[in-house]
Length: 535
Image 1 (cartoon, rainbow, N blue to C red):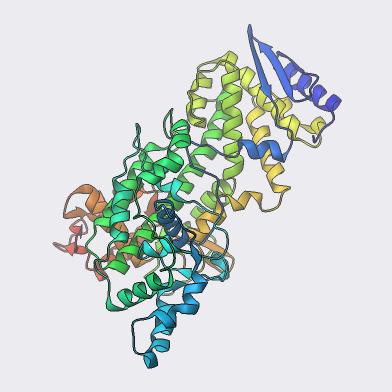
Image 2: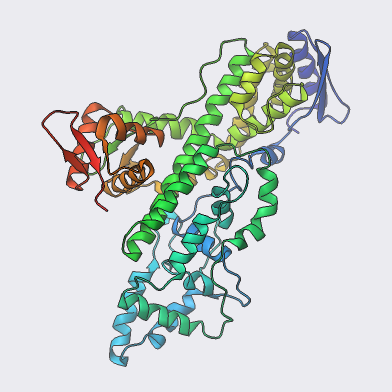
């Protein structure tokens, strides 16, 4: 407990008196009761970091807590969770050692072929992206079915794919079924692929064969608990629907096998990163709206993520970047202000929701701060009680309640969020591990596919690979062969949260599309540009 019982009791009495309400701390030192306007409320106070960790998750927004890890491992683990293996998987290091023995080639050529296969079929992550331990590329489900990699995976597993399959009433298993069929098939294998799989199957011959990947196993493992978490709806159903639709599009693209597997990993990583940014932004801005409602101010519109990620085109040659560029300022706003604070925002959203419900406010079953702000704006009595309970919760977390800013009416949510952030900061890397680290390992770093760094400058940038993929996804979703570049394609891009950082960057984007063969110019007029299909 960060404050003494007497100090916390005095702080609770002070915040109540400032609001013309009555409140007291129960003898357990963990619960506050309050009354105002003929209504009563009670809230269990968080006291320390362990208490906050219990609030640092919103099941309707994310299937589980995670930390950053190598992005290709997500697909590896999803396949494992879709496969029932009655035996024990062996370490992929065993395959590396025995590969030369099992390759179907003449003895003099096996070592050369083994060296080629090792470079082709093992992923070697950098230290900045999960460490230096290599692991098998999941281009076929037989590999995760028989082999485990060394080290513990810290990010999501098969539960994430099942979570993405939630359609509002149940699990649409079309996507995992198509992923299982694609990666479980021998179609499109090159001669080297076939030789490598022959060796992998021979090295694992003593294992009992695992059953083919089947999406129903995801439901068996994660379905019952996830159904409870989503019983009142997903936090962002629109986001889940878009991700599921786009991943299905990728699996159905007519691409060579390895290119399609890579595109699936890129699309998965990009979408989860965008989802994290969108979630962090909605929670952070929503909490600001709750604070405005408790302070008696008018509410703005609901938090709108469209076009907030201002990017520059990474295929326009080597260009300097400054911290004052829009792509860098956009990164600072979304990453530094919202994504880094995501765990604290989830804690605050849960506590505000509990405080509002305890105060008799009808704010719905899902802890969406903006929905809560709308309900509080229409319930002055509930707003006063919620403000009081949030201020009391902040007092419970503060080292020095005597200087608590929450004593002034309308400042309860401000004080609560600052107290939660301070508690996380005292624990070192606890903030960045659950938001920024995940996004960085998915799409970040010096050669990242969404966020990049050059020296001390961090910024958003899309290269031609990601641009190509987004064009395919947007066109498939539109069910049209072409879209007007400015009037249709750019607005569709904004709905992903993405926008060129300037008019000049729009021109660079159109040039990149032209180099990719994805742009049709019907006249010299600026509006006669159309983004088109080539697949």
